[in-house]
Length: 356
Image (cartoon, rainbow, N blue to C red):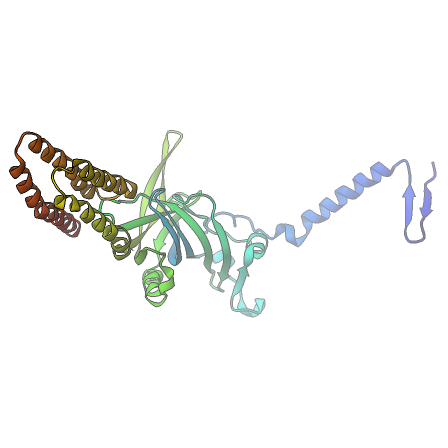
């Protein structure tokens, strides 16, 4: 059967019964050319694997900004900069031939599509969610030394000790491992060049701190951790980053403790009321107790305010039994006994926080 050719004035169209066969031939021809194209063979054999056993990766971490600290959820959100470097002789090149002293791949596209070498996937195992990677860059030197730079936002879940609140200092940890590579393949080391970078940056930029907290320092240490997988354990290299934050106690003392002190002192006004005014005395004490409960703070204040209720009930019992003079003497003594006990209680708690 002859082929029929139609033309619409721009391109001829061939209509034939063998059209499906022609399309199949064209498809395979395109695939064959694609396989042999330079872009398809850009990844050299063995490049997805680490260049040595083990490959030593020097890592540094820097805090750029503290976004927030959540005491209830025990989470810490920050903007960090991550730097890693390693040697990969397979990526070495001749600067004269390439026409450059350094190959740079920056941005998501160049990193994911153009760079063909191996890199460690550094995973922070106590990170909540994926986080946002804001910038990424890889630099390759002629001798094969590779430097990896990344800026990301992380939300870390880390235990907090609130026993010394509001005079507490929190030491939060970020646990980083090379994802998919055991310690015989990749070993993480602390890059001492960046060990003091965060501390120096905090001294220069006070805006790093979040409301209510001061970033004290950042320490990094390398160790190993074991993971049990299907009955067999594997050892992974790990870097533990400790971030030290100190709570700004002055703000809490002024905003919470001082109003609470005034509230407790107002309840002591019952000691100047007549001992027969039991209803008025109890109303003042109960209002103070309910207000302190709303604060949900300081057990000592709650206990000493509750004690005023028991004191008023006891005085009422003495008066009913004809012992008014004793009741009035006790009331006068409570004017200084309660404040003294409260001051001693606060001083004792503060001393305990300082010493322990």
